[in-house]
Amino acid sequence: MKVAKEILDLVPYRPGKPIEETKRELGLSEVIKLASNENPLGPSPKVLEALRLALADLHRYPDAASFELRQAYSKFYGVAPEYLTFGNGSNELIDLLIHLYCEPESEILVSEAAFVAYRISAQAARVKVREVPMDSQMKFQLKKMADVLAADSSNQIRLVFLPNPNNPTGTYFSHAELTEFMKVAGQRPNTLVILDEAYLEYVRADDFPKALDFLKTQPNFVILRTMSKIFGIAGLRLGALIARPEVIDLVNRIRNPFNVNSLAQVAGLAAVQDRDHLERVKSLTWEGLDYFYTELKRLQLPYWESQGNFVLFDSLRDSQQIFQSILRKGVIVRPVDNYGLKSHIRLSVGLPHENQQAIRALESALTELPQTKMS
Ligand SMILES: *Cc1c(COP(=O)(O)O)cnc(C)c1O
Image 1 (cartoon, protein in one colour):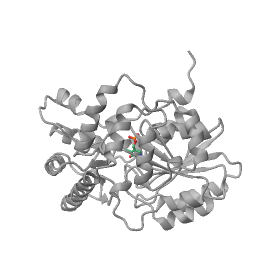
Image 2 (cartoon, protein in one colour):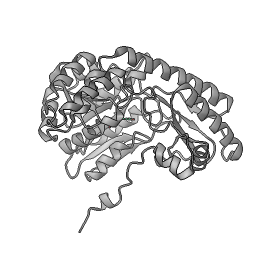
Image 3 (cartoon, protein in one colour):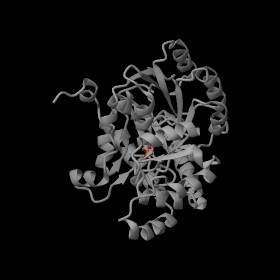
Image 4 (cartoon, helix red, strand yellow):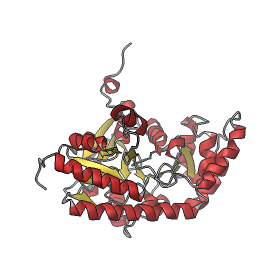
C-alpha cells in the first residue's frame, strides 16, 4: 500500500526507558527512573480511593461531556465551564487542534528545542513545521517568532505552539515577552497561539505570564494544561484545553465522544480537590531542583535554571554514552540528542534518595568518561 512520505519519514516519539525493560536488560533488581518528568509521590491517596470505588462501574461508558470534571476544573482554573474540554492527555488535544485548523498547505510555528510532540503530530497530519532558533541561553526568541509571523502574508502559519516553561530546556518567557508577541500574533485572526502550560504548578518565576489575561483579550489564544505532571496521573491520560467557547465547540465536534475514560475522569476530579497533596509535590520538587543545582555546580556542569520538575544540564560528553553509563548504575535519565542537544541530559526530580543516587551515578559516570567538550 502507498503511504505518504511524511509518515515514512516520521521519527516516533522516544519515551523514557521503562523500568522493567532496564531491569531485564541489565540484570538489575533496583532501578530508578528520573526520565519522564513524572510525579515521584504519585497521585493523592484520595485519587486512589476514588478509583477503587469507580471500578464497580467499568461496564458503563464514560460521561462524554465530562460534566463533573468540567465543573471542578472550572473552579480550580478560574474559568467558566464552557471554556473547557478534555483530551486523552494533552497530546490528544495537540492532535485535535492540528486536525481542526490545518489544511494541506498549512504550517505550524515552533522554536528550536520546543517539546517534540507538536512536530510529530504535525508531521503525522502532513503539516509542515517552521522552526525559529532559540538563543544562547536556551530561551525562545519570541521577537524573531513574531517577525516570522509578520512576514507570513499568505497566512500559511495556522498554529503557534509555545510550551512555557519548555520541556526539555526548563526555560520560560515572561508576561512582558508574551504581551509583545501577542501584539503581532493578535493581528492574525487565522493563526491560533497555543500556550502549553504542562508545568504551570511548579513555576517559581514572578514574571511568569498570567495566561488567563490573554484568553480574555485575544480571540486567537488558547491554553493547554495536563494532569500528567503535578497531579500525578500520567498513566491515566488526562489533559485540558482552556479556550473560548467557539473553539471548545469545534474541538468537541471532532473529538471521539469517549476520548476521556471513566477512570481518568474520576481521578482528575479527586486530584484537583487535594490541594495539600499538590503543595507537598511542589515543595518536594523545589527542594530537589535546588539540590540538583548545588550538585551540578559542584560537578562543574553547565545547567539551565528550570521552571518545571526537571533540569537540563550539559554533561560535556556524548549524551548517549553518559546515559548508558548512568543506566548501568541503575538510574534512567533522559538524553536529549533528538533535540539536537548532543551532550545534554534531562534529569527529572524524584524522591530525595533517588536524587542522591542519580547524582552519585552521574558523578561516577563522569569519571569513567573523559570530558570531550569545553564548558
Ligand atoms: C509532559 C508534557 C505534556 C503532557 O502531555 P500529556 O499528553 O498530557 O501527558 C505536555 N506538554 C509538555 C511540554 C510536556 O512536557
